[in-house]
Length: 255
Image 1 (cartoon, rainbow, N blue to C red):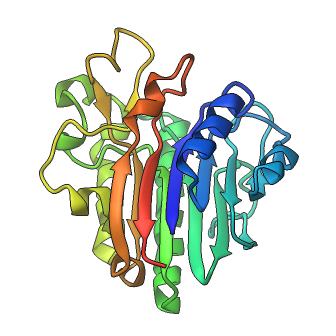
Image 2: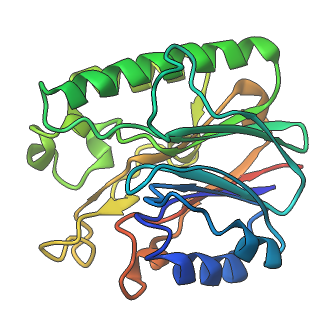
């Protein structure tokens, strides 16, 4: 099963990009983040052979799952705060595989309420992922985590020292997810390899100079890790005309 994740930075602005990319890569499942729209074009994707589910929010956030196979929505709410109105979480099942799509808070500026919310949200994600482990169901958690896990995951650590994505607190929380027993699919298959990023700023020729960061991840439960076959970043998608600032990341799971 080929599962992809892509922060599209506005589904309306990038709709043609997504449809073209689907036609070229034919993933079984595509996770989308940062929809920035209250309405999701499910009918269009249905014509392309994809069922869909989405959690939307006007102008901000938003996540969706597209699937060529039957999918069932399990939850749209992360544990710990049912009053949270941010559209950042969607849990589904596809072929007895649990797939969670997340769009974690950015958290900037450091020390603000946004940073406090980021850390609290990651604490809730930890509790949710701990619960999933107890079920024994193969689980894939994908999306924009808004965390640079290690120094190797950015072009120049000094450039990110004052950014929320690089602070010790979120990085410690990310490592705590790994300590639970989850595997960072890309890093597992590409140990010690630098220069692999999923996000490049629109300014200062960041993409052309490969001045990026790796913040889009797939974390796999032990049951899913045993079925891991491949994980790659489609950097070419970032080179499209008027692209998202993120590139898709793809993981191949044995059926």
